[in-house]
Amino acid sequence: MMMSKLAYILLIAVAVMIGACSTPLVIPTTQFNSNLLVVEGLINVGSDSTIITLSRTVLVSAKTTLKPETKATITVENASATVATLNELGNGIYASKGLNLDNTKQYRLRIKTSNGKMYVSDLTDVKVTPPIDSIGYNFKSPGLQIYANTHDATNNSRYYMYTYRETWQFHTPYYTPYISDGTNLNLRTPAQDIYTCFATDTTTDIFLNSTETLSQDLVYQLPIVAIDSASEKVQIKYSILLQQVALTKDAYTFWQNLKKNTEQLGGIFAAQPTGNLGNIHNIADATEPVIGYISAGTIQRKRIYITRAQVPQSWRVFDPYGCVSMESLFNPGSPPSVPDTKAAVIDLPVHGYATAPIYGGTNIIGYDFAFAVCADCTLRGTKTQPSFWKN
Image: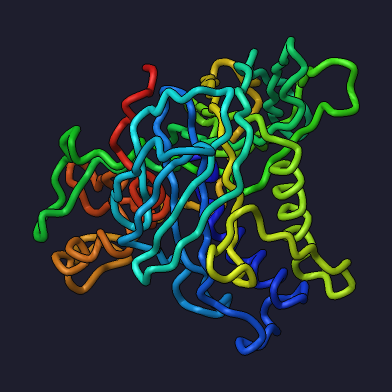
């Protein structure tokens, strides 16, 4: 999906654009419609899937941030005919397998919602995205700067949008070899290990670049993301999947305005944001605002990996939780004592995990323990290794 996780950005931006105010918390709900249609996605003319997401805006103060638009019918058209119908996958997501369309034609989206309203996007030219030449990185204080290189020898791209998805392998500050069965502490099996996990994050930023003023359509060492040297992301292995899409000038202007609007949030003296909502319209009511911009083209992706061995050995992961091993669970009779050892062991999954036994002679008289956030990687990750992961 081209605009993955940008629904929240659109939600905030529409509150600003329609309310004509740069501080969303003070916008009265009577000033704008909180149920506007939001359309995200790209008509992919190549062999990749076309994925379109429909949702509705909600109040900034609402508890929910996602309101999918279901039971709609979405078709892809050229100037004279329907060329594809998307299938509903659930949660407002509609998709079609690779369309392999003629990239010399223009295309648009037609949407019929469950309440019978009809929407169409403007016919748009196809932009064939050039490949990403490379993803590189260099060391800049205080960490790692990842950048991208690309070029278009035909000089036909000029306007680019980037999104990325990060995945990293990490471990907790403490290893906990023991697990409670409700009565006793037993050694964990490999399947019960909670020391090493994988985490993933997808950018929600609007990331754009233009080569319009350059003599060549060349992107060189474009900064993508910076990683602090103390970040957990570079503790074991890190990977980034970069996605690049070439845009028309109109599409680039739309996303540039949206980016400007979101960056102005919170500043009461900021310039008034633009009212440009996109290229999608209600056929029967041209005054109804619709949020989103539908482009047609192709997507290019590239992934790299960075291992611990590739970063300076002096880098040390910062512990934001203040993890300190504590000698707390002792058997009765050994100071400090716990009135009910069994209860304390049962309570371990809630308050912490045993990290090492404490011996009194040859007998175990207690355990060191660490709080759960310091010992259980599943609290912020998953043990399941991604299918693309390289060992």
